[in-house]
Each structure stands twice: as C-alpha cells, then as structure tokens.
Image (tube, rainbow, N blue to C red; front, side, top):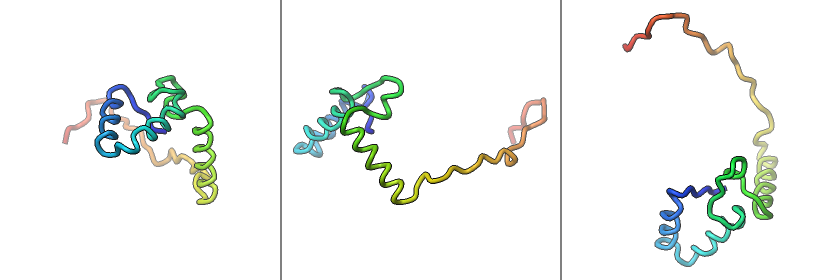
Amino acid sequence: MLRLPLEVRDLFVEWLAVHYPDKQRHVLSLIEQVRDGNLNDSTFGQRMRGTGILAELIQKRFSMACRRLALNTHRRQLRTDLFHQVQEKTQLSLF
C-alpha cells in the first residue's frame, strides 16, 4: 500500500497534478479507498496494510501471484554459526 506521510502528501498531490492531471482524481480516490477516506492512516498496524474491499482484493491478488510464482514457499534457517562475538574488552581499532 502506498503510504503518504504528511511531509510527502502535498508534494505527491502536486506531482500528480503536473504529470498526470487526467489520472489525479482516480489515483487519490484509490488511495483513500484503502485508507478509510484519508490519504494517510498513521494507526500502528494499519499504516502499512490498508483496510476495505480494495485492500483485501490487492492482498488476494498478491497471494495468488506468490503461489503461482512459488514465492515465500519456505523460510531459510538462520545460521548463527556464521556470527562470531568479539571477545576484546578494549576499544576497537580505527584502522
């Protein structure tokens, strides 16, 4: 989901008006549909997801594409043996 924080929102709306004036209302409408009528939702847990029918449709399409392309089918184990702990108690060398 596209997230438009306050610092970027006006710039994005202006950019749309300059570069895609015929699509500006449609693009902003789609963003508002997944943000409960706003261009941004800063609620924790919702700001990167979105809500509503359109957000669910995008999630379903994404899941179907992942299955079709065999993405996210397995997780690799974290190999902690590749990490080593520095034992020195002194300040590290700059060079």
